[in-house]
Amino acid sequence: MHPKHTIPGIGLLILAVMVFLMAGCSDDDNPLPSTGEVNGSLDDPEFVLIQEQIDAFLGETEEMLILGLENTYQLPIDTEYIRNIYGPMGPDDIVEYNYADGWHVTYIAHFNSYANDYFRDSVMFQVNSQPVQDPDNLEWMQYIRHWGYTSNLVDVTHTNKNGYVNLEFENLDQDIATINGVNNTLWEWNYYSNDSTIEAVYDVEMNIVELQVGQVPTYGWISGCPYSGNLAMSIEQAYSVNYGDDNDFWVRNWNVWITFDDGMADIRINSENEVWNYQCEFCSPPVY
Image (cartoon, rainbow, N blue to C red):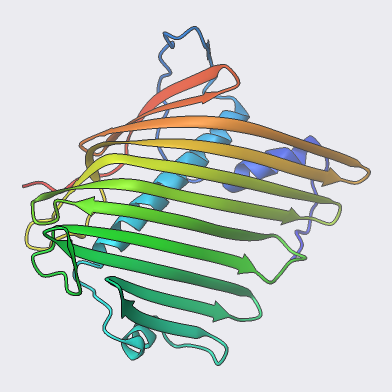
């Protein structure tokens, strides 16, 4: 539905900031950089907006790590088994599963009047560097997901998202596993009021480097909280704003580096010769 009140001009941009905000990491200080870059303000509205989005992307990345690790114990069996897990299914929905050439492949697609969504998961297990069908004594796993969500309510405020995940898990026969790979997302938010529209697009590419996660004692691989490792993100942020007879469009690029130490994240953000540094307690890894 359309909002009852419209907010023209700069007020609309402030609304955009407020809509995006989510709970996330604190920013108590911003140490001066040693690279000659300008120290960005922690109160800069553009920084506040991108910081909250980074927090959200981090949360989604942890969820993807957990989704990958779930394959070590929730192995697909056949199409009917998959249908029961993801049901109920509509008459136009698609459910497919097969195992071939070492890959378990699952495809699910839902279609209705409000939105369409899908994912395609590909999982390979290896023992002694050889593909195996079952995860017994598992040492290595690759998890690939293509996914998307598209709203069919195109004349009201809505969100579209799609992404690609490709992760390799090593040392799954140990207490601590190592994860490398990518987690990319294209996120589009469309805001509609009676006299104004905003289209915000975030194109995120994330490299995951040597993340280490641990088994939860007696529960196995159910935690995606890293003991150590690094993430590198590049974000292209684009806004198109239309309010009456005026239009604005701008693009800003951000680079993000994150280092983990027992669930604590050290975060460095760079954009247009400005830099921000802060820490946050991202998660609590398993305790042995």
